[in-house]
Image (cartoon, rainbow, N blue to C red; front, top):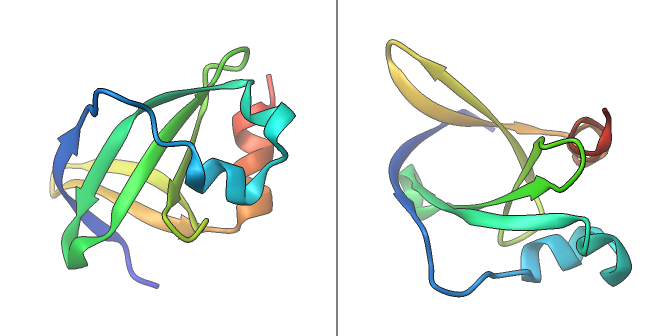
Length: 93
């Protein structure tokens, strides 16, 4: 998969937990805060969750695919990563 360019960031009134619930048990979801969503090219929506202790993010699309955020002089984009790596990064101190 290629990097996805960010088109718009949104901050919905209500959190959307479904993507995180696809990859974690419900009791573990309580360790995260919903921070918003990003609309990327090809209409991919990426949901942003911040771990309450590590303060690190896990970014997931609606199917549970994980992404890592990258910013450069060419703009912001999200790169697909392995779910296990994204979970490890988000929960490590």
